[in-house]
Structures are given as structure tokens and as C-alpha cells.
Image (cartoon, rainbow, N blue to C red; front, side, top):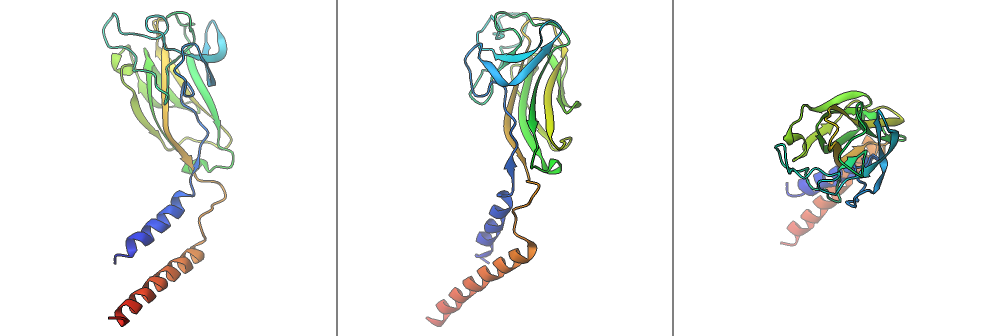
Length: 223
């Protein structure tokens, strides 16, 4: 019986090795430096059209510090994710409609097996969308939307080829508008499986059990 656990771990390792990483990135791309241009996330606004989003980390200028109007400051930037804005010189946003988006490719991956775990926040309120479909919502002007990040797991709605992850603001007072998306896990199985065929798996398991059984017999014989 004691050999069943290592055997289960062996087959579990084979299964885990079959998951590939989806190339999707958190906001900030690992930077906490104010005014850094995010290479993966863009913004679209009514006045500024579409351009690369900026990392915000200047309290009271482009990073809400919670100094008035209720609620706390934006959750701190880290190397895991940072707040991004459309205006890095002041708190005013480009105006509605305002959205932030990134694209990623599922080339060579099976969309039906894809899963992304993330946390996100927004000031003031907004919807998180995958390929145009709302998957999470943080409505209204609510401090809980920005002084902590909300966990979400996406397990459906992926498509072959290019996918779009976006945050569309639904509540915007045109002052200190920002988005923070932190990807913790993003995996999918490759279209061509690397897991051994069932027959090969059976042969492998049989061989391991025979080897362990032979060792046990030798031990008993030596007593």
C-alpha cells in the first residue's frame, strides 16, 4: 500500500506536465515605476483614443492616496501587478468611454482546457470582460473596488487564436481612474497531448509495480 502514493505522484506529475502557460500579463508588467509605459495593456478613451497605459505610483497625482472623499488608497503597487492609468501627469482621466485591455494568443493551446486565476481592482467601477463577455463586475463608486483586489477564476469563454481581456469602466468621475489586474495562474493543455497513451501508461504502471514487488519478495526471502 505504501507504494501507491509514490505511484500516484508519478502519474500526477505526468498529468501536470501537460499544462502549458498562457502568455497573458498582469498590469504593470512587473514595474512599480511611475509613468512606465505598459508594453501589454492599452487604454481607449473618448479624447485620447488608444495608446499604451501608464504605471501609476505617484500618490495624489495619478495614484489615489485616499486623502479625501471616503475610502482608503489604492492597494499598493507590487512587482506582481501595478495600477495603470490613461493620464500619468494628473488625476483627470480621458473621459468615458474608458477601457483598458490586453490581448493574448491561444495558438497551439486547447481553449476548452484554459484557466486563468487573477485578482483585479478598479476606480471607480467597472466590468471585467473576456472576449467581450462580462466575467466579473465591481459596480459603483465603492472603496472596496480599489483598496483591495477581488479574486476571479476564468474557466470558459476562451477562443482559438487571439483573445482579449479588458476592463470597461461603468462608473467614472473623471478623477483618479485606474485598473489593476494581477494574474496568478494561466494554463491550458496543448493541442497535441504529451501525456503517454493509455496503453503506455498501463505498461509503465505494471513495470513499476513488478519492480517494487520483486524488491519486497527479496526482502522476505532474506529473513
